[in-house]
Amino acid sequence: MSATAALALALTLAAPAQVPESAHKGYAEVLKTHVKKGRVDYKTLSRDTSKLDQYLAAVAKANLPKGKQARMAFYIDAYNALVIKSVITHGRPRSVLDVKGFFKEAVHTVAGKKVSLDALEKKHLNPFAKDPRTHFVLVCAAVGCPIIEARPFVGGGLERRLDAATRRYLSSPTGAKVSDGAIALSKIFDWYKADFGGSQGVLSFVKRHLPKAQQDQLGATPKVGYVDYNWTLNQQ
Image (cartoon, rainbow, N blue to C red; front, side, top):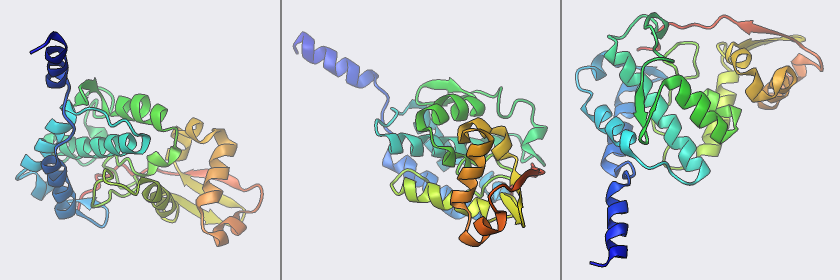
């Protein structure tokens, strides 16, 4: 074998593999079986996490996809799967806020990097995606979150699903409550205000994704408030 061929082989062996189809299908089965109406049956899933574990092991050593939408979908699925696993690891707490360091201190491996859930969202997905609609598909295991969908995001249709998830959340009482000349929004819009372009950016974004009747109800300069965030575990 030539030196060039040997080097190429060494690089191939050293590079992490993509998530195998079997692991991806396993995660899809986990979601299909244990997610109903946006809630997770953590109790039943906790009896056998082998498919979830296989998927997360693959995520840990995977190459990051090169395409933007493919990488966004990879990060979204990784985040949601890690949240589910972490809830089970900590015995299905009443709220993830009862677990010290759940988001900022606990370390996970994603594509060969050690990251917290907070870092995965704020230092990897958000700066890469530059799309605030990702806030409506990342699910932090709380009732106040957007609902978790019963299928992975890897596999196509990301643009359509981001838009649908945003509109779905804003049409729910956890996302927005509209009255004449006023709107009460999820605290997500307050915590991540900068991602939407500040206060005016939030309002413009929300108006674009509300049904026409509610847009008209708001008027030109609505009063904006926020809904108390419900951190109760999103379990069935």
